[in-house]
Length: 356
Image (cartoon, rainbow, N blue to C red; front, side):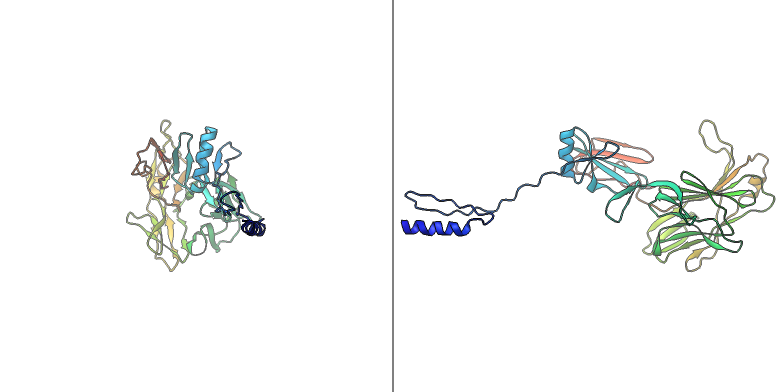
């Protein structure tokens, strides 16, 4: 027995200090016994929620959000479920809510974080103008140029996915007000107004007084090698990727005068326009607008008159509260509007994808 005991003690000395090994010595009729315990992996604790400056609780994943929501009695944002146009929360009762928006509300950053969309325009040192944070990287032109100079007045995207609107002639220094840049007197009595939107850009020409002669506005469109631009079936512009997917569009231009219905807020006198498209080159489509001369000359027309073509370069799918409901679990609450779809259900989240 003493020889066997010596062997065990010797072996214990050898194992002492080895991680994951527990040595147990038993004496008596069984002599000695060596027991090696299996490695035990401790369960991973849920990460603690953090609080944003606005008081919103956030957690890195759904498991952590569930634990925090239950403990705090508040809904908790799930950071891993964020997209450019939706936000997912876990509620204190264990249900999951996804708010989907009809356009981007945040922009992914190179470090993997998100930044909120901010269409407030600021002027750079070189005189160019851009929103503080824009999904399509919108940049507006600086002042300068000559009567023969053609250059981009507005650009979105980059490289093969870029879109530029070209302007020929000098440009004055724009006046900035929030998301709007106004270039005064680009033609006699005409201001060019560019407005940054979450889904792209709105362009308009504002005629302050009745023109004395024919009027037209030329804005050729240049696209990168990864895009094509042309007329859709309804005559409006469409931007497509090389695989034929529509990635942007321009609605039918409209012109209206300054009269507004006091009840609806709608413009009383407005007229749809048809853009004039020239023969496209490899990358540029001639595009111009000719305001209706009869509308402009009508004594009933009250100036200023606005000519408005807008462009959307952010497309998702159609808003639908039905799409936001998981097929295996009925929504406990669903509400929708023109801009937001909200759905709440038990279990894991799913999201709708509204279109701007």
